[in-house]
Image: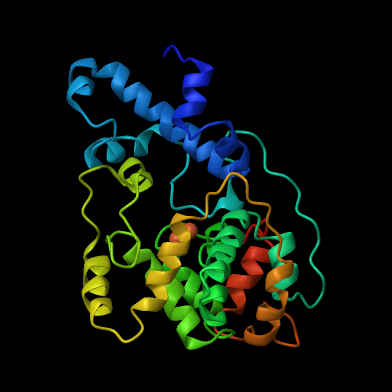
Length: 275
Ligand SMILES: [Fe+2]
Ligand SMILES: [Fe+2]
């Protein structure tokens, strides 16, 4: 059993305000990460004295078999605090993006903050939209979420918007001080301090450095960094017109339009379907 001081523990998660701002799933993840870190430190006091406080990639790997679920699982498919999942409200017959946003994309606070930051920074609407959408697919799948997210939205948004969503995942691993992006401590904690990005991420980064649209996913990462403001009060309202202008809503409803990604929308709408 590890002895934990409550105030010290909350401080290590970023303080009361930061903890209060986290949605349910994020808070559960952060608490789990912090408990795992403390468990490792308690088990290895000598190494801890010399370490940075971040786990190594090998230590992160060793945690896999300590959980009843895999970390890449979509957030709407499990409750990481061990309690039961809730019944979901019914969806309208022809659901729009805004219906999904309200009824199924529960981890949307961070994306709203990111879109607010992008708007404050004066970036164009295609990229504000990318920020609004950039992590939403994590309700369905967290592993490789940039690629899943781009695929989910691709038939309905401008090409530059889905490009920004796809490649923000890769650029999160690479500092660009000139653009205002530094490698985050959050990644040292969740991937391990000596983590080396996967080959497809390295290859995409090399491609992006010479791409005319490099700035698009880079802007998503910059606005991502500042999307954890404990004072922020967020709403979809400032973005409804941007969604109206740039999101090509199918008249049959998302999931009913026969597109190549309709099944992804249906799975988000009905995650309780047994098959
Ligand atoms: Fe992301
Ligand atoms: Fe994000």
